[in-house]
Image (cartoon, rainbow, N blue to C red; front, side, top):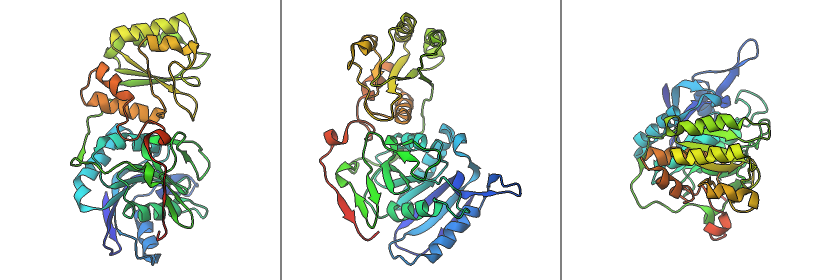
Length: 363
């Protein structure tokens, strides 16, 4: 690992570089690999070229083991959270560079783990490595460096292409485009153009309590996408074992949370309820809420105690479950909290906030 400090401005920004495509370089065969130190050097060169007075002092802390996005897991979320806790009072804003494959999961998890967050934390990365001519890395880097200390956004965010999203509302939507991330059920917090347009009415309020980090995420869950060609008996075996195997079963169902009236599925959900296994429904659709009683075909699910995820993404649903069970809450307590808005992860924008926006012209 290494720490490098650049520029000499009033605001202080910490970049935690965990890995991902941004800092990769090709070997002699053209295969891309993580190259320790390379991206840190590029950040230094990039900042030396900039004349903008509002850029902060930037410190890069590079992970000792740079990871591909697909290798990120809860143990790495803990490392990030612990680093943020250690450096929280020393910096005005934070940027986390990581791989795109699991970036939305990381953003969702950190939004819960960082309690009473009063500063801006932005996750970013790139689809194309910095070393390539047509790369999105430089743009994403400069934008996040500019925004992280300049905006009064007390949230975990994700920036990609030209949009700043609430982190726990995002999902990776495109494997091959620069606008790789979407926020299907919530507008962007800010959009970049000739100026920075901030939807200030959408922002979470500043916290009243002292910042603290929660690290004990309980990840004992199984996520299943239900399809017409499906072995329901496999789910039944899981339900019979109950909490010996896991504490929650997340089912991605059709549309607004619809499932067939298959007797074996109903038996599975009943056994899950009897064994203390919590069942949460999300939708396979990218946009729109889960509404447990929208159709008669799904009403039987509510009767079996299945919990709708409302308009949360699967990424946010899983992070929230891990956070709540990690708190030591019972199944009933977790179920009660699933439809409670803790970090802006659920609820329509027009229902929770007053419309409005502002423009930041100096960025």
